View 1 (cartoon, one colour):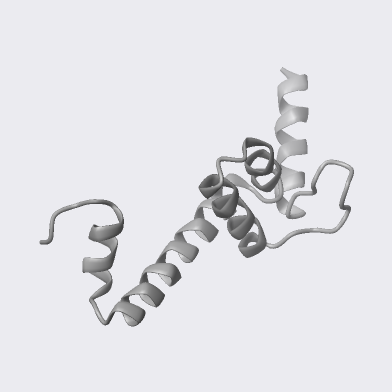
View 2: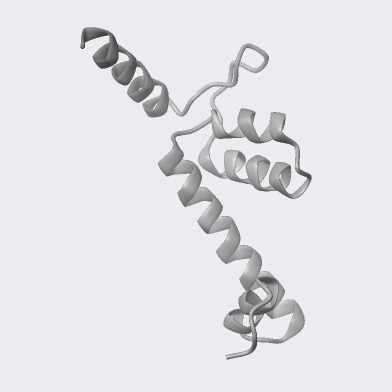
Length: 98
């Protein structure tokens, strides 16, 4: 029981500090850096970079960062295409027009 509590506490402290990459880069990454690295690694299907970026911040922070990146990307594409964000999002996901 104490071992699980200790592991949970260690994960919490790591997440509270913003996470650290494993050995190579000792600086703390912010959630937007993590989201950008994570999404670009996913787009390139690079599992090693996906795992590295996912370790920089807590899962909740990464989720927020990915969501924010998606919103900003859809808005930028909508402006570029002169379409609504809803239409762009549906097109990107391969959904029929609403």
